Amino acid sequence: MRALDYEYMLGLVPILLGYVPLTLMMAGIAMACALVLSSLLAIERVIKVPVLDRFVVLFISFFRGTPLLVQLFLFYYGLPQVFAFLTQIDGVTAAIMGLTLHFSAYMSESIRAAIVGIDRSQWEASEAIGMTRLQMMRRIILPQATRVAAPTLVNYLIDMIKSTSLAFTLGVTEMMGATQKEAAGSFLYFEAFLVVAVLYWIIVEVLSFFQKRLETYLNRAYAR
Image (cartoon, rainbow, N blue to C red):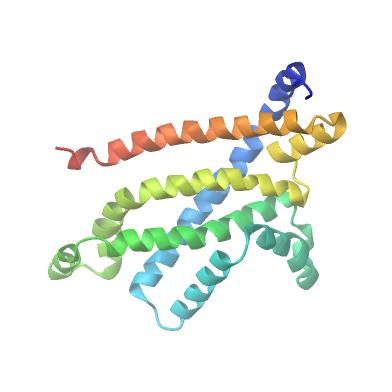
């Protein structure tokens, strides 16, 4: 059994840390865009606008029912063959687009569940004082739904950060792509992938810590 090359592993850490900002940037932008899109999808699913609702259901079904890797390849390799202007899209942009659409489909269902889970009396009281649907959502329903959906949405952010590792299949040199190149040059695959696994693990644990703090903060008014 071969001994681990600890010197190589320690030397690899600062190299991979240099790619952490790109990984977090892709996940951060995709999460922000997915939050906006998923909120709009969830509101539409609750209100059920005629005709539009069918397209929303189809959108959610497609992006939940197909693998993320397939969607990334579709955006980066497939669509440019159909739409010439998309040939200018680079791997980072394609990865962000894929992550946004894929996770917005899942997040929309979580947000929708949080919205419909609000007590019916809240809806009726809002209607009784003459609020429009938009005012009701903005002032009464969504603030309460945010508290319920927030922990789940942080989980999706964690999944999104881990899913950025698929961006290396589009030629993006992020943490996973850099690890692949380093491992191919040294042939120390186990050490290289062990280091990147630990780095992802640390990032997830940090986010999990803040997730618990966020839950405590949001539930402070309900604590006895």
